[in-house]
Length: 97
Image (cartoon, rainbow, N blue to C red; front, side):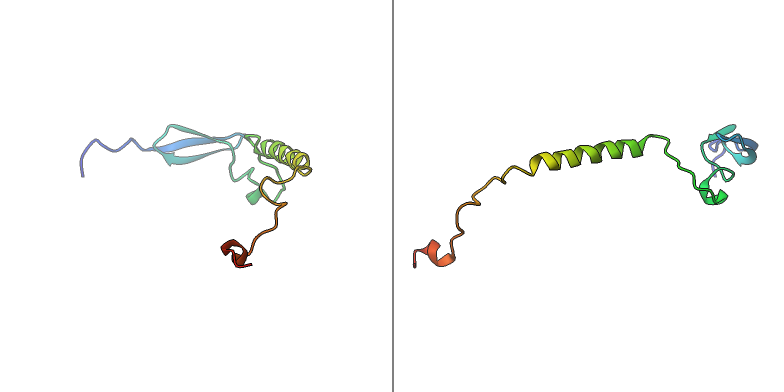
């Protein structure tokens, strides 16, 4: 094993959660900040809590609303193509009518 290539390991690192909970652990970083810990995560607490930190739900609802209005607007239009013409059979295409 080569010497002096490994990071320094700190044994008493304080982890701070956004809920205010702190605990000690070991890491190569001096201090750690987290958004969710075992004291405030819904899985561990058993409480129903909505975690949407980046607004993903609002983005989805906005796109869904735009899609439904687009569908309503485009329902009245005919599809492009030759739908009015009757489809010919293979005999008709070969000229054996």
